[in-house]
Image 1 (tube, one colour):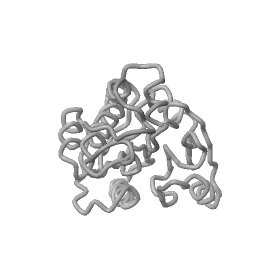
Image 2: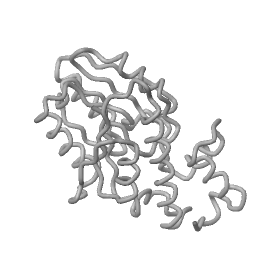
Image 3: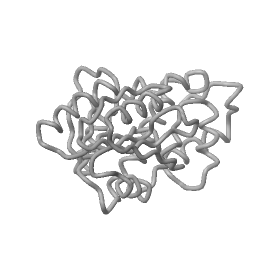
Length: 219
């Protein structure tokens, strides 16, 4: 089971508030989420997908793509959403979970396949962010092997938790998975990367008329 936690996108990407106003941040978050979910939908080897969200835009998109929607009415954040979804997977007897965020728009289906191919029968796979500090994908087998606690420096705690189980832990570096968008400089990296995804076209359209270091973009 693939788990994608998505908080309310109207409040997303607060760390970009120095360069993006709320409307632009929401537009960017929606575009990135569409990029991620489209990649999942096109992935031929795809396991079932569960979206944990209270956001109407995400729920509607997920339903159109045939994904399961789990209402996150309390909206406790990414960590709380994953705890809730993991408990549901455990109740259903699901063997493993692969957690990915909704803000890694350059993710590729072959990277997702590589994660599954690298996974031990019992154990875990962790994929770092581009800085090597965060966790941008986490596979656990069984599905509740250890708790996930997401944040800016989640990778080392997750690695320690994985090793504490005594089961194998595979660490991967995958460029598409690693590229999240949290800082102003990440917008420039996204715009400069190869491809024509929704989020890239959006940021490039902004980049023609504003300077990331000098002003706030208004959607």
